[in-house]
Every structure is written in structure tokens, then in C-alpha cells.
Amino acid sequence: MKLIFLGPPGAGKGTIADLAVEKLGLPHISTGDLFRAAVKNGTPLGLKVKDIMAAGGLVPDELTIALVKERLAEKDAAKGWVLDGFPRTIPQAEALEGIASADSAVNFDVADGIVVGRLSGRRVCRSCGKIYHVKNMPPRKEGVCDVDGGELYIRDDDKEAAIKVRLETYRKQTAPLIDWYDKKGKLLTIDGVGAPAEVLGRFEKAIKK
Ligand code: AP5
Image (cartoon, rainbow, N blue to C red; front, side):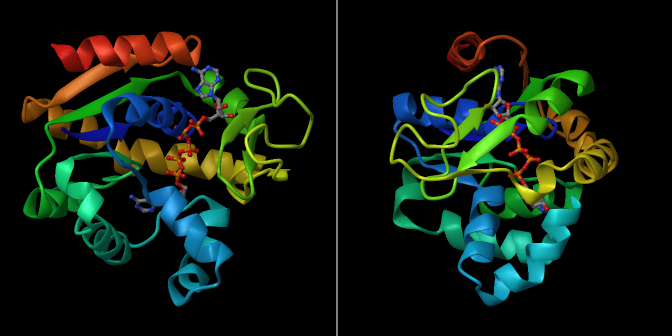
């Protein structure tokens, strides 16, 4: 099964993808995670994208498409995947069609007011990447990852100014993909509001159909 997760920043794509891939036995491929790893490791790609990401902008299509093409050529992606955060522009969606056609694009529908609250309370483990929220999904011990004891940090792009830019960028460049996939008959829209288990249940029901 080849699935794309669409939705505004903070819609819960990463949270639901982590839960879904455990059950589906597929790799969770997040372009945001791949870029953050490049930044952390100080690779040439990381140096190019660091400031763009911190400001809330999109990485140029050619860099993003090349990264995804390389990742989808890895062995574990042969059985299918959940692509989280890609495509994010029409040119990226067109390029993906030339690499591998997705079965469905799952759009997590969440209003702006809710995503701002989710993003401003998000904390992420510096070593394993597990996602928390100070109120909705707090760790057992403040500032410490339940899984590996790693330090929890606030993403640079979760600061107020960057959140505003990300939402504007989403509306202009990514939201048009909803119609694009709908016209192809591949769109599944899920209500992304509610506890993660509830949203996961809606997702599972939708993909069974
Ligand atoms: P990326 O990491 O993809 O960021 P994003 O799309 O903005 O998505 P987020 O990770 O912010 O949110 P999410 O929907 O995964 O929500 P999450 O599950 O974490 O990209 C980062 C940057 O990389 C981009 O801005 C860009 O610069 C670059 N980039 C990446 N892909 C690119 C591409 N294709 N092209 C160009 N540039 C690209 O949840 C958010 C919070 O809410 C968490 O705290 C979580 O605990 C909480 N939460 C989640 N679900 C629920 C729920 N059901 N109820 C209550 N709280 C919840």
C-alpha cells in the first residue's frame, strides 16, 4: 500500500503515521524528518535547508524530489510506504507520479486554531524523534523522552513567527493538492480532531473501504 499524508502543519500527520505504520508494517517516510536529520548531521543538504526550515518556508522542489527519489529506491520501500509531508507542491506531486503512483492521499482536516495550539505545545525527542505535546500527550517526566530518556526540544519552526509562515505557505502551495488528488479519485479526507486513537480509527476505516 502506498499512502500520502496531507494536511496543515500540526494536523497530526507524524503522530498518526507512527501509529499506522506499526500496524501496516510499512516504512514511515517523512521529508521533514529526513531534512531535520541532514541539519543535525551538518551534511551539505542540511546546510542548504537549515535556514529555510527555521523560517517556515519550503525547501526547493528539486532538492526535495531528489531526496524522496533516493529514499523510495531503498529496499524497505518496495513493499509500500506512508509518505508524510511529501508532496507539498503540484510539481512534487507530478514528479512523484513519475517515480511511483500512490494508492490514496489521506487529508487530515484540522482547523487553524487547533493546529496553532498543537504546534506551540509540541516537544520532540532529540535522539529518537518521538513526538509529545505538553498538554495533549505529555511525557511521564517533563522534558525527558519516555522511550529512550532523550532530551525533549522545541523545533525552531514551532516558534510563533514561523508557524504563521508555515500556515500561509500551506494554504498557497500545499492545499491545492487536495483538489489535485480529488480529481484523480484518490482523496480520503479524515476528521483530524479528537484523540490520536480516535483519528487512527477513522483512518483505518477509510483505508479499508
Ligand atoms: P514537516 O516536519 O513535514 O512539518 P509539517 O508538515 O509542518 O508538519 P508537522 O511535523 O509540523 O506536523 P504534523 O502534522 O506531523 O503534526 P504532529 O504529528 O507532529 O516539515 C518541516 C519543514 O521541512 C517544512 O516546513 C519545510 O521547510 C521542510 N519540508 C518538509 N517536507 C517538504 C517538502 N515536501 N517540500 C518542501 N519542504 C519540505 O503533531 C503536532 C502536535 O500535535 C504534537 O505535539 C502532537 O503531540 C499533537 N497532536 C497530534 N495529534 C493530536 C491529536 N489527535 N490530538 C491532540 N494533539 C495531537
